[in-house]
Length: 195
Ligand code: FE
Image (tube, rainbow, N blue to C red; front, side):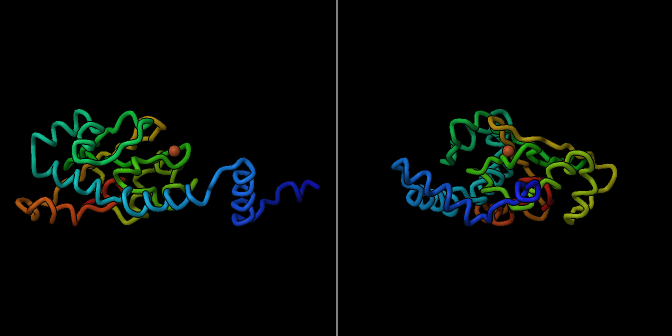
């Protein structure tokens, strides 16, 4: 009996059970899923955050507004922020400080700005180790930071979301915003990569 109680149904069977329960209550999960997929693929894309970063690099006044009130500054660019994302804190990387984001509880991100979280972001291993041994985790992910760079880890909550503002690569100074946005990756806005 004990063995059986540990069995977990396949993801497909669990999805079917949830859909059936919603149908029974007169809800239409198919329409919701379609709408969600549209949002996730067309609107909640990392290009939004890339535009924010590119503008912050190009426009010092915008950078100040962004650092002072991230939520207001991304809305200014026409990017949606769900009402429950009450704060968007912008973490400015410098030559001596590197910021990295995680969600130790689950998988929260500023998903309308940087896109939905990657699979590894939701892994128990990343969530636990990003906090305790961030330098090793970053190294394993291909970002080997010299010891003189301080790493700051930020744990997302339901109402406070983060975006890392990467250091602008010096060779890109003077580029038009659109071209700058093209080099900004989701990983760099989570803080597991530098540009
Ligand atoms: Fe979360």
